[in-house]
Length: 152
Image (cartoon, rainbow, N blue to C red; front, side, top):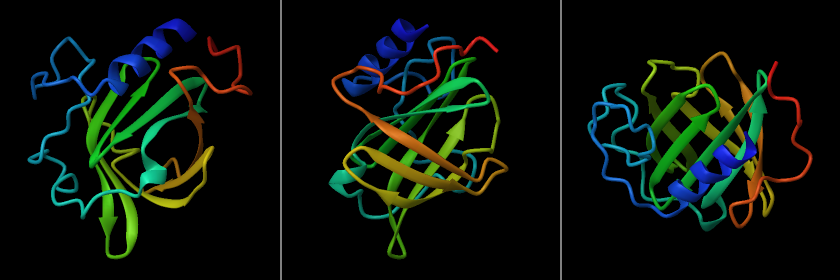
């Protein structure tokens, strides 16, 4: 399971992408579109701070969630199939993340960055999830301290 996630992180960290906008069967593209249909994914600010850049990992409901931010682009992948893409940037003096998910979920549609440090990121999502704390993944490796039993 960890190898699959590391492979996903490696794919997304390369910034390749260019997949189709219809959320087709590839699921590996993290390239956001500026015309995403949620209404929130368009017009995300002027860019992100350097501290937000990179791959961030958390667990939620027994699933590993990877949030990848490169420039103004953001992608989120959760074990079990959730794939989201969108933007990250400053809006009204706040760092915001706006995502559209291929499965229609709005749980992580809009998130405000509460804090970011060299190894931690806290985002409050407007959906039912509320605040999530992410750990930075360095060099395509999973951070230590993640639960090892994710097959619940």
